[in-house]
Structure formats: structure tokens, C-alpha cells
Image 1 (cartoon, rainbow, N blue to C red):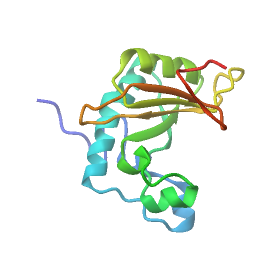
Image 2: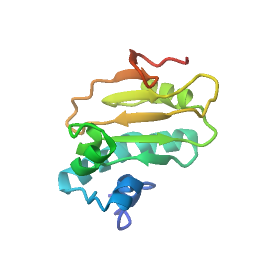
Image 3: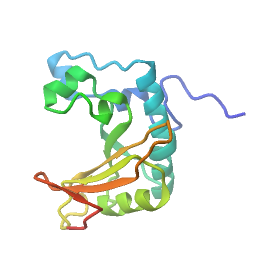
Image 4: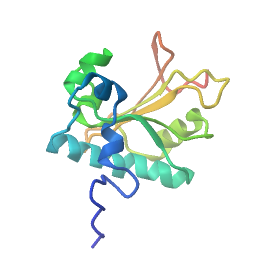
Amino acid sequence: MEAPLPFGHLSANFTLQEMTKSQTAQRQGINNTPNKPHVDAMQALCQEVLEPVRDAFKRPITITSGFRSKALCQAIGSKTTSQHAKGQAADFEIRNIPNYDVACWIRDNLEFDQLILEFYDGVDPNSGWIHVSYRADGKNRKQCLTYDGKRYATGLDEA
């Protein structure tokens, strides 16, 4: 039997607080509190994707965007149907590890729904960030995309 997680943790190294933090929500007084299905989805994402990535690269992961309430999605111009609004997605980086390398590792080693290498320029290895989503219902598409700010391209493009 596994030991219970510390209070406020979604997995060994990820907390509910870091998966819901938002400067925009804080500044604008937007409630970004997830419900139980959102928390369950974030827990699955952390345990099935983010923890294995952290273990593989042996470095902390910086979550730049996790759960977004519908009000927060509207405030930042994101779709309210986004997987972020379901607790299924996170944007992140690992300091001093090229985002392209991390994205390729996820593609080759993990189950995921969508993997997007966003704003990666191919010059600065730490440019952009990685968006990854995971569906606990097992209906993961393993869709890989690259987004340059204007268009999406299929696959992971080293630019």
C-alpha cells in the first residue's frame, strides 16, 4: 500500500496550489478554485505525466499554467472548453533542459492526449514551453503539435 500524499499534494512533487496559481486570477479577483473532478484530473496528469518527466530529467518542473476556471479562461482569452478548464492540461518548462528534448521524451515514453511545443524557436533551447494534457478515461489521442504563435503544425518541429 502506498503512503498517503501530504496534504495539498496531487502527487509526490506537485501541489494543488502550484497547479491552480494564476497572477491574472489574483490581480483580477477571479475565483480559480477547482471542483473534485478537476482535482481528480489534475492528480492523474501529475501522476501519469509530470512525475515521470521529473523523474526522467531529475530536475524540478516549473508549471506556468495549470487549471483555469472558466472565468480565468475568459479573462486571458482562452477557450472555456480548453483542457486547462477541465484540469487535464499544464504548461511547463524544466530549467536548462531544451523544451524540444523534453517534448520528444514525452512523445516517446508516455501516454498523453495532446503534446504541444509552443513558441519554441529552435535557437534558444529554453524558448517557449510545453503544453501537455492527459485524460484519465484512457481516450488519449497522443496528438503532437508545434505552435509558433500563428499556426499549428503536426508533429514536433525543432524549427
